Length: 349
Image (cartoon, rainbow, N blue to C red; front, side, top):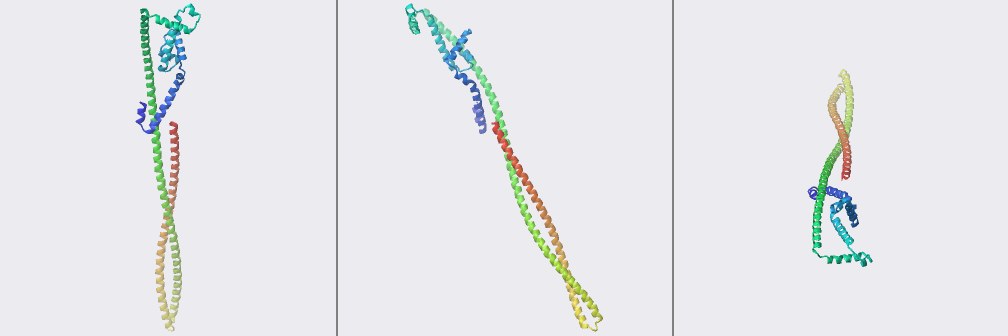
């Protein structure tokens, strides 16, 4: 029955079942090894004499009980041998040996005389006694057989109880093994998910770091462009100051020349021309200055936005590194939990 249960379950259950059955067999059989090994004819004969001295008739069941165990197939032949030896001894003790043979006093002579007496005693009375003795032996054998059957039934019932207990214990061990196997499967699945998350976090961290590097390059280029624009703006501002100085000087000259118009008409005309050019140049420089100022403001705004993006990228990179570190620590914890589950499994087995 245990074999049928074991083969209907998974492979690990078969291993647990076979191991448990082997351990029980060793434990149960060890209680019988000494008894079976020490059952000899001398032990059976001593038990029979002890039972007979107590006023009872030796049987296989009573001898087995007196020995504390043993197999009926071992006890039976020894008991028969003892009965035959006892009967022969009783017959020899009843033989009347003649005086001339008594001098020899040997057991062999007595046995030969007994054989001769048996051959001579063929009368009806002897046959009647033999028949009655055979009937008594048959009745005794039937009683002994019934006693053996009762003892065997009790042993079988005890073995059935032990088998039921073993099957219940096997069920508990199998359930415990299944629970441990399921827990380990869940832990391995969680470990795989955590590793996938860690790999994803690592990829995200790498992308964030790459983006931060790109933004850093963009910010550096923007800073160079801003420096160039600042230089150009300073140059235009310097030219504008010079132009304004020239315009002021030209205006002053114009006023002076206006007073002396009559005297310096040519000079006034030239001064007006220079003034017009200076004004035109001043307007152009002012327009260029305004455009450069607007462009500088745009560049500065872009530069500030890039700096903000760079700060965000660095923050994302830091968070990604932290999540990666947490995932790695979680993996170590899960790997440590898997090793503990394996040890518990071996201890349970």
